Length: 236
Image 1 (tube, helix red, strand yellow):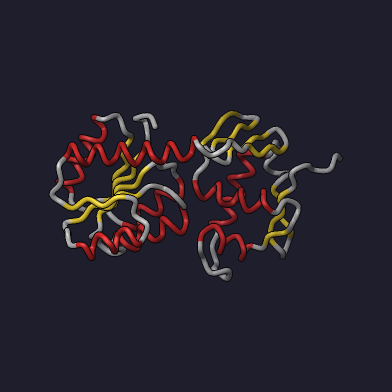
Image 2 (tube, one colour):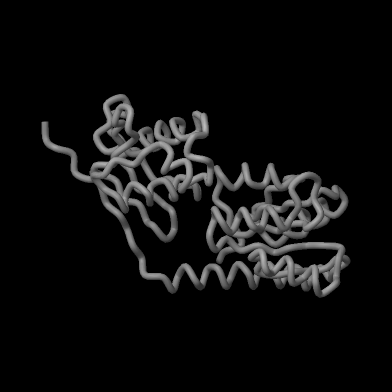
């Protein structure tokens, strides 16, 4: 993976965060820094990320729970866990929640940067070894591996959540999917949750892929029942 890889750093100790940001950016990485697990999950919901560097001890939601949420919602996104704890039980706990690597503080900076590069290289190799699969509908094309889309208005990079929703629609083309099913499968919310999040995402997909978002032909609302995706709309 090139050094332009976007990295999310989740660290609540400012002096540690500043040092890591400086050295990661010196290597050419794009670094976003947040101080809590809640902020991290919000960022991942709307942004592409190649690697998450996650402190174990965070205010509120701790690193173990954040890592578990990442595994539930973002699949194989690489996670490096940082902690002041070095006991075997703590390492096992972190790895058991899905962390790909574990580094105890204080650590050697060169070793840290090598581990970052190795995780990114391994992730890149896994993507490259997966056959390319592009889904076409209308004048649009979505690469299911790279999460890039070609539309009538240009190219765009889709977020993990946008891809999860699209995958639901593509895999059930022509069928009605209820709001509850989408909330549960994409966000892990209770089907009865009252939220405008889903509606906002539908609006976003229509802006991306519909020739006239106000008169959608692919992402249709079925009043009182949910939504339906149509790959080849009927000709008027």
